[in-house]
Amino acid sequence: MGLWQNGRMKRFRSKGRTRRPRHRRRAPLARSVLRVVVLTLGVLVALLLLLILLLRWVDPPYSMYMLSPASGPIAPSLRHTWQPIHALPLHVPLAVVAAEDQRFPRHRGFDWESIQEAVNARLQGARLRGASTVSQQTAKNVFLWHGRSLTRKLLEAGLTTAVEVLWPKARILEVYLNVAEWGPGIFGIEAAAQYHFGIPARHLSAEQAALLAAVLPNPRVYSPSRPSGNVLERARWVERQMTQLGPDWLAPLQLGSGPAAGVRTDRP
Image (cartoon, rainbow, N blue to C red; front, side, top):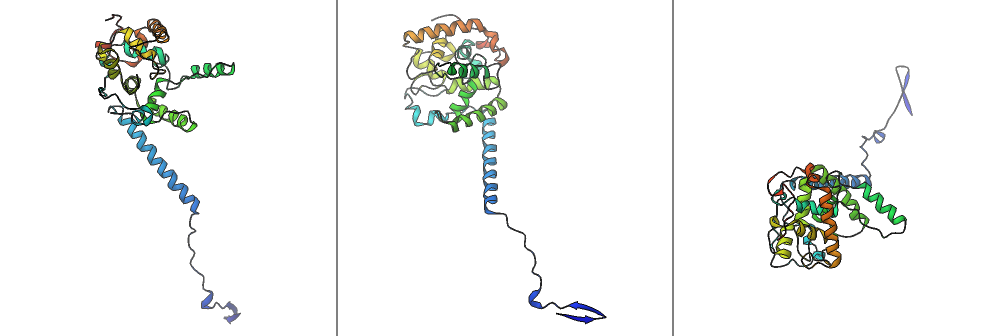
């Protein structure tokens, strides 16, 4: 319907047909939920990275493994005392590196050569052996739980990368020495030295350091102070590896001078 005005027809619009203002479409619920999830994850990752960065200078009083039920009761006579790596004789960290991760000063968190060797050995029918580095074990002990789930391994890989980027190598090894388990409820190199040998960690001999490093694969079964034949054999192997590597092997870590300046071979 229309009206003629000035020789032209003009369309008549009733008040009931007036155009409604357009409203902006609301985002679908799924998109809003996804946005909240991504934002939450981003905040959590940022906080975790901030915590990792803070631990570059602040010594963690406990690790997640220490607080987990799997760690068992901590020996009541022991107190977790932090021991700076520069206060230790060099043969203490050298023994751990020789036993656990000889490429530690050179790799960036993951020893791809050891991983490839473990995979090849498994394909040939051998038992699957671990290829975790000191960096991976540090990330696992400080921030995660123990287990073999895929979720934990993925988290461990991400945390290891962050630790390698945000911490110097010397700090990674120092944290490992202070959170590693050397017996049921015995955590840290100072507690291990006091419990097994009755001396401070700074007085450990090369032989005692090798014995401690020899039990790291399974400290709840083996004892450095009451070593079995297998432990003694592995300790001798660790000492040979320490000699072959030499103190200069840890030179990239810049551990400095003083008590850690040389490998002591004196025995009590």
